[in-house]
Image (cartoon, rainbow, N blue to C red; front, side):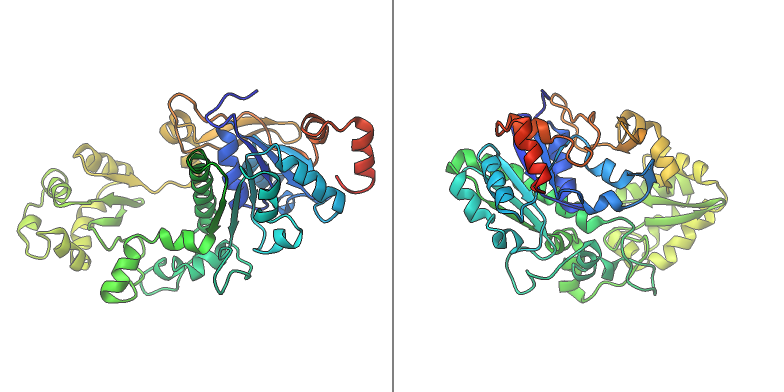
Length: 397
């Protein structure tokens, strides 16, 4: 039995694709007993998403590690009854169907609470379970577009741009994790479970930090590439062999940059650059002054010299750099080796939350379709092998 921070929590996972599975992955990494429930003979859509190794999806294998897997047809009456029996033994149900789907199946929160009033019901969808857009379908790109993230992402003078990964889905999954853990604690206070509703669009909007405030102050923020509106120099800069970034978040750091790296104390008395507000306003004049120095150095030289002066700076890593870096991949364990029965040895993303005592543990590969049917249906519900065989033959599992 796994001993982790959440090893006393049982989760029924009805989620597919990314936002929901990301949430249940986080719970499973900390020891929750997560039972992934998939449609018989079909499974999660991402089983068909590339890339593939030996016919198995790396996408699915990464995001569904540490979970057990069963099949169950919730459209059948017997399947619904079985699910309701399982809810009696569970702490959490997680789903990411379009709002209303579970209610149509007769398995919405109100029905589940009748058989287990302690159940935490976590749901993530494009627009949430209420509001004018609640019934619209929503994927990550919809959330990035309607959440405003694309409108502030892109090169100056260019087109609104989608962030390179599925940020809306990941933020939605993280927020659902927070919501479920909060509801589990609230259960101790109020004596019962509750519904947790998370929207991908809401999650994106909540991440815009100063973007919303800049809009209310002066209208739609302009596209600004790698530049940050609230601090400067906080941008990418040219070196002799590419680009790197500097993060001067305050006047003290800018002073260090000028005195210890650029040897340009004249910049400190220039009225355009005296304060952070001045520098943000006159960034077009300051950037070339910094690049007069930086283009004479390689990326490594520039980053090393700036970092030695106590100013944040970094190379712009590609994924080869990320996955081999001694701090990120090794010391912080953000790339983890795991053995999969079909794929073989594979690398998966690590868990970013580091509990110092009850650490996250990534040691179980994603389940094959229905892999845990015998274990769960027998262990949870007491079904014998003949019953399980009959359910399979009738398309229930």
